Image (cartoon, rainbow, N blue to C red; front, side, top):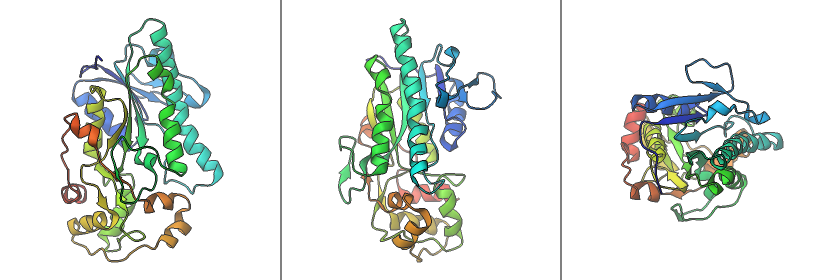
Amino acid sequence: MTTTQPGGTAVIGGASGLIGSRLVAALRAEGWQVRRLVRSTPSQPGDVAWTPDAGVLPDEALEGADAVVILSGAGIGDRRWNARYRRELLRSRTQPVSLVATRLAQQVRNGHPPVRLVTASAVGYYGDRGETLLPESAGPGDGFLADLCVAWEAATAPAAKAGCSVAHSRTGIVLDSSGGALSRLLPLVRLGLGGPMGSGRQWWPWITLEDEVRALIHLLTSPLTGGVNLTAPEPVRNRALVSALARAAHRPAVLPVPGWALRIALGGFAGDLLASQRVVPTALTADGFTFTSPTIDEAARVVVG
């Protein structure tokens, strides 16, 4: 299998989010030409407006691309999971991926070479699995998030069938002080109000934002296909993660958040916070990727500092 060479043209969907915006900057710093797919009026050279909800993707969006990364999707924890928002979570992920995958397949049929496609996914793929170690070979679990991730990854099928090399980045909890789940937890930790969620014994697969972006760039030129776990090599229990953040902030972490309180406050999303997923990045490490923050104490010092 041929792989994409670094420094080519990368097309990014979901480029304005926490991960996407940092990915765009990092790719440009490494010499890539970056084309952002934007839903608003283009504001940077190379931006292309698209409307995936309506199936609108201009022909020039993918022209000459060496790799495509699609990170689009409504925020998992932004709203309570009523039936309507569950549909939005699914639609906002599968429609953009399906549209791009279909267009890439059309390009191949028209004589263009296959393009590397990397899409977002999540460790929610594995469901609540207790103490079970979860490399990429583990099958999908049960529950809404697991079903969502299965559908999300399946949306790439047209591109894969056409011969494109496709990888799904099954990302864990991204640690960064500027956004994501940690932006809500860290202020509480700094006030000494952080504590384990539920029993605190559930395994939390995590990764720093820096390593998440580095891993995505690694995947652009990697031969890995299928699900790839983007998590640090040492998953920790929820209690240990919160304690590491508290130590880095020189604060206590003794006030537990009962599971029932999370369910009242967050609805369906609470189940994800209380789920146990002992995920390990077997494929990524075997492919030669090294982490800048492989342990939670190192990550906490970087994020909190």
